Image (cartoon, rainbow over all chains, first blue to last red; front, top):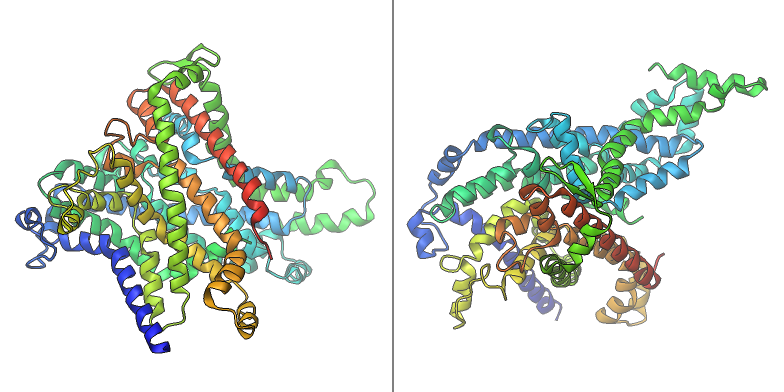
Length: 270
Length: 313
């Protein structure tokens, strides 16, 4: 009886996994097909030749846009970790007048979707001369309420005695923050890092608005152009582009899934 | 490093000196402010100022540069509510929410329950179930664009096996919004699954053990233990999915461009077009204000009605 139950569970799991993963497999398979194979509607390519990948890199400055995305995602991740951990520290370890109010102010930013501020932000970025610069793609995302809360949850678990002891030892706030708090919070810093990297790499609307020349485009916008350029004829090339753009984040997700899951739960629900 | 000494020495003399200056009394506040300053500056420039600026702009006509020219009071809003296009985009947005949010949550819950079974190799399936979180809106949309392709795409090939006539998924007004919703649900599943699965893992196992002794079956446990204990997580993921649905843009831009016949012209896409294609910042700002209010109302309503039924430990 148990064996039957287990067997049927596996069947269900495999079927669902295939169904869910199908778009990714499909993109991967089509990326190796010639135009003729695509037109015939084949599901499995005849050979795994890399022609489409070479074409995808030649059709556009795709490599350049990948480097842009990588740098933008890394800068945003580091910036967000620094800015959010500083703020989280103040909320946990410094008792000051107005803490409640400032905390409420941070919470309220969660109620304001990014899209709601996009028009003035575009004008601001334009006035600052940040159009087509990394600054526009990174700096506005350094401060987030989500990141601050996630880290705050973790900082709260650091024993207060540790803070007392370090004060006795003559450590000021900044050294306590750098030498004690940050090192013991590695896990949640990694969680925030993974989450931030994924969301930045995948962002679409804002990079579309603030980058206008080819050299500053991110990979997502590169994909949009690739699709516009090759639309009807070269699906194999377009799919090669999809696979190239999706690989870095899929890797980050697969490697960091445990971290991400635990950290997100701690930050989100508690 | 410069602020180490002031903080430590600032504490000690204050104990035996009755006359503290204002500077000394607010020392902790100043230190806290230093830590909070980067966030506060960024929030002011990129969150609070734009919000008020948007509200301000929504009462004006604007020129090509996006600068306000003539104050028109509520005219932008009145015109929006009389415009069939805008009402259509509101309607499409609510339909889209209806198609995507409940389905995403229910399917993710089902996946999470499956992934919570103790089986060999279950980690592999968990990774697969979460995989769409690692796929960007652009990559997913382009893939689905091909899946929906009327002649070459796999979807029509599958349905033709069942003798169903080919469907022009993205160009047929009856199907376009559903097709966009399908793509969106698939994109949502990774994140929702991960959150709900995390919630499942946090449930105290002893609850199940004691009820098993009482002879409770799987579905009884599901109804009496799992769902109630999971309700805060379900509530959280519902709110997040709802807010995300209101903000949908990438799928529309790549899959349909708002068509056919504006059936998929969701609010953020309409705002994008009015603001950055037609450069009508006044009208677009009014649309943003309405979107913001809608998100606010829906979130508050959800808190009011759903929160009551949510079980917290």
